[in-house]
Image 1: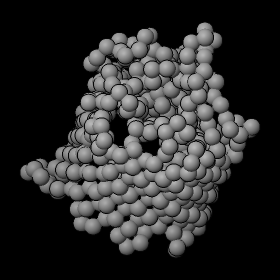
Image 2: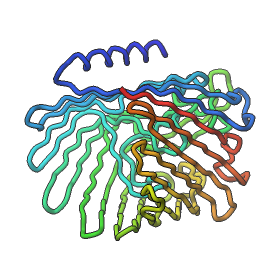
Image 3: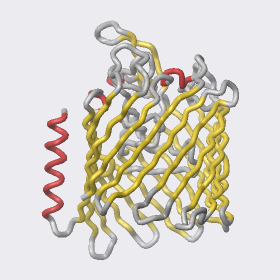
Length: 399
């Protein structure tokens, strides 16, 4: 698997650079996860999890700017968890830009949402679950996307002909459930399985100080449920179960001076009883808090999820509060720190994250991430990760 990844990526790196009408960029990163406690489950890695990350992007654009080709592969080679070693085309598409419309054909990443702690409305792309548990990393999604650009706003229409299954850590991996997930034995509600054609639409516009988006999705849920099963050795596993859903969502952001008011909400049917979920809050930025001109943003958000236990994919955010802070030094090294924690208001279970990054010279970036779990109740979904607090060190070279 690792040889295939290196061969495929090496061929891509060599070809676009030789073509004068293509723009090419790439980065290679060395990463180490260091877990501070012994594993909770048999077979898991102990402390050290090294890996190598490779990103590349090749872009060609016609002279008139109307035609664009993009190819952006991603690869990770993990030293401990075979399931975390993977290759993905994050983007591989052709795009035509008309006067009042935009047509995209291929695979790409679409992001919807405004809140910091959770992106409820972000439903197009599948989560790359071997990267982290924060659902920020996404797999490329094959699609046909038509965007209408009018005075009354933007309307995006999506035809999604193929479904990407979620990735999960292997038995050796950390940040997993006590019973491993077997992604090779997924279940589907629809007989077409991954070839079911999904559809989606989103309208967005600015109304004074308001930035509003309204979305609708119908198709295979990117968020699976889990069905007990056994593997080939008769060991217990969870089988992902992908159901058909219809989801309506809204995201809104109000900007006033140093204030950002944010909200995301959804209503979903198809996974047990119809339920609603929402996250909303505020971010306030203190500008120029140091003589060098650094900014400090303070964030507070409330998370609610009304899904029924046992009939829908599990959620750890039924009634939770997020507190965070964002520090930007605004220096030439682009130094920044983000820290935050989500706490359950009923049982006090808390998960937190600290991210810091700084550029060195023109081509290097260093990053430190710390994820921790404290005061976790036995019946909280976070209990599966209670012993997985860790620090991640990452050094990236850009080309």
